[in-house]
Picture: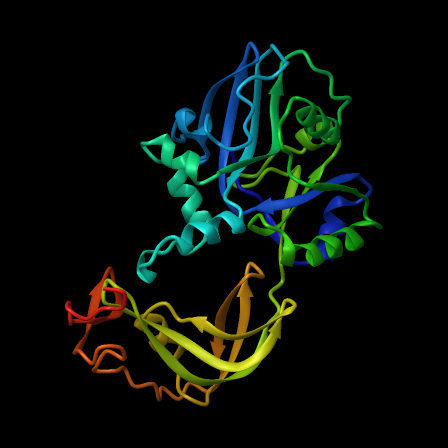
Length: 338
């Protein structure tokens, strides 16, 4: 299973599609899973792994919230899709975790861990969803040489299929714009779009490079970047003693919402950005969701690393793990929520 070539240009998508008809769909940000059915029953579920060898996760796939265990098609069926955890479920799970440091960083990481759980009861509680995006083989079925027909057939078998639009070169820009407007309220993590040739035989005749298939291409969102002024760094302690630097800056509008803070994650990143109070910085939303600092235009290096914890006043220390520097409070008796 190869990865896809990528572009951030709608014009490049149009040139790639040419006179063909395409299937434009969400590029979901989860964990790719391959399902195999025979005699109408789910036989095996495997992760993408390194593209050739994956992990068998059949026991966990059986408790995904929307995978049909039995289908009407009795022949061999192999399909691909993305295991995802919705933002609403991600937020619910994180709200139940008191320790800030123990909270999950993003839905993708939570999904990856959930799919690999040894206890599938934990997987079931996390409401993992499966969205089909590709059919590998379906024994004895004529799809009239159309990927759209494959998608619609999978729906009739009971699978949730990734949302898609049929496009031509002329209609492509409008379709991309519709997806772009929808992402801010879309409950499933997405980091772009996928354009797939509808003509199965033509797409397969194009073959592939050593890295990419030639019948599909990925479109990555071009980040909206705004300039603003860094006011200060807020030091946010957790129960584990880790003190996270958070950048507080003049509010700016990004992807339809007002943002004024972004995690800097650790001291190594803060030092690489050479942050200082009053610096002119650029900010964006990673995957149009999570505020991040893109660059520091001033680089004054004026930030002082606190020698005392802002909550308990205890002494702080810098620790290095795997070449990453982080700040910790050494007072074990006075931690937030401790």
